[in-house]
Image (cartoon, rainbow over all chains, first blue to last red; front, side):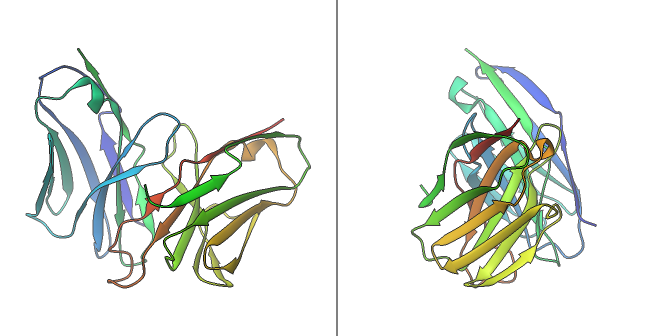
Length: 109
Length: 116
């Protein structure tokens, strides 16, 4: 059974304080690992797809990386508007999307 | 925006009543999904569709049924709602092609359903 574990559950940062969010996973035949951002009262918003170990994707202050067991979402010099819940999900050989429980990020001005 | 509209956005109903949630897409995508999101759980798949009149069960399908008579619409029905079905329901879509699920799903903004 595919599994996704995200840590920590919640993270509070000062504006400008860089950090990383962790997503550990076990999967049979990874087809894609996905990062989403979810704001309160909204649906998940797609950020990145990673397909193989060593791959990296960047968008503004966010960079996602992938190893054979983990993915990290690095946030550089975060701003208050980066506050949200970040979801990690993956698709394995069964083509079903499995989600982690999410990491709630708060960035204080 | 992913071109997904969910309706209603909020609903309060009583135990034992039937409830239908609607998902409408303007992207002409082949795949459509229904998830529920509850505190302490990740998003969990209820049912999905891989084409008109083609549907299959997800991991939490008991008590739910779905229908897809047109490419753009995917309906989720609770035949007799129970309090355990109080949740936020999300619809998602995915384009076809690629290698079985290696393309991202895109989500609507959800329906908050309360069953009293």
